[in-house]
Amino acid sequence: MDSVWLYSMASVAAVSLLSLIGIISLGINIGILRKTVLFMVSFSTGALFGDAFIHLLPEAFENYGFGLNVSFSLLSGVLLFFVIEKFIHWHHCHLEPTMHHPHPFAYMNLFGDSVHNFIDGLIIGSSYLVSIPVGIATTLAVILHEIPQEIGDFGVLLHGGFSVSKALAMNFLTALTAFLGAILALVMGGSMPAVGSFLVPFAAGGFLYIAGSDLIPELHKEVGWKKSAMQLLMIILGIAVMCTLLLLE
Image (tube, rainbow, N blue to C red; front, side, top):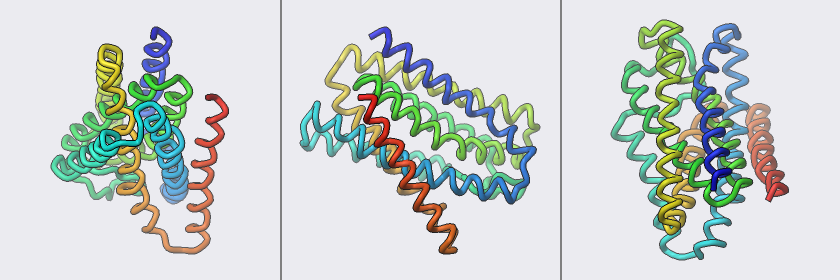
């Protein structure tokens, strides 16, 4: 159990440090950044789908059976992310980290980001309760999703009037809520093993919602066949990486 805590905290720390990645975007031409982020979004889409269908759900079915409890837990993950986006008025933005970013409410974005990072920690912690390899795969999927998200969040804060230093500091502080989520998952799972039957498919539901509701619509904004083909290849590559991680199990 000590190794589960160690891996979980190290993974959450790595994900939290990604909140500082926004500073890199300052030295990159916005046209190049937009194209690069587009492919990153495609790759992370495949990684999220792959982690949900190749790692999390098979583990849930194997350990807890294919019953209504798993189905309701999966749906809970989907619905909670819907509630976050619908009622906190926040959504992932991957393609417009510029001064013309459509988000006018930087503080609302910070609040929503804190909730999202908390759930990321919950997902990471619950995945390590299944096994170390599943936790590593889930952490990788979260990281691939967080990179474009954090660049977008950095743009939101700059557009909202934050200085570069304040934007970096506030973004980092919101990332730390992931530790709370991971700790909660580990404490709940450690004291009540049956909680895992909820947390694992719940995590899969969250990933499916992010990939299907947030990332794929961003990809549909590009209709050129060459870029669309590259998007498909990057999605397949993301899935392939998740398949490769099966070798660790």
